[in-house]
Image (cartoon, rainbow, N blue to C red; front, side, top):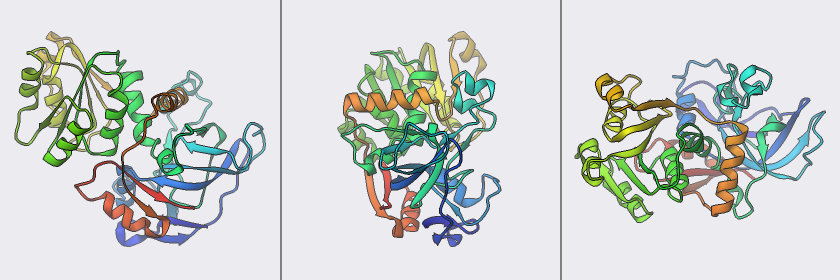
Length: 342
């Protein structure tokens, strides 16, 4: 079968390749991919910076939607031809954390495309527990985007962040896939949604989409501006995937008793916390990664109930997969990038 695969690290070593067709083992299914969606994770894997050992050729891609192609032994509830979206987080299903329903906390947790052969391919093999029906108002291309970023966003907001109706939320770095997912899931629930970016163009698009205010963190002090916008109160929750100085600004934006949920460190893996502010204002710093089966099914139910549609910035074909990855690496994206496979 065809796949956009690594044959080494760096853009010079990624190309449309012929790789072996997957076959399902016990408890597994093979999904014939109709569409895949890209994430920043694909670029990190491509670069080799993650220091993960891969067998080449290694198909990239975490997110995907398609139809069941074949099933392995012990799979009786899924039939060939069934439309599904893939949860890209693979857990062992047997450890104490998996058995407690916390699949993304599994010590052997892995992600398609990062650790395992991915979805930028005509077919992919996954555990049967990792495929879900998706809302009928979505196309395959739209459904494919409800993987890494939306699962992560749902867990950040509702499972780890415990967002309650009417609370005020600050989303950092609007424009990227995770921030867009956070915005779409939070907007119907939150009382106010504020966003930040270094791009005035992205900030305008966010306000046009319903953000209550948009802050350019290059030219404004985020904490001070939020204080001004909220009558010195601050927001109830900050959701952040940048870390570094962004985390510090987020903590300064919180009300007393507020919390910041962080799911990334693209701007820096270390931050100097003001512990006086942390304990005196009774703030919480909460980590979050991907999601559980319950997070995935609850997220899809919310998407279906609200008839949410992802912001798709651009669509490519599988033959254009390398071009799609290069476009992902550009700075002026706003929304998800989809690769149509079949």
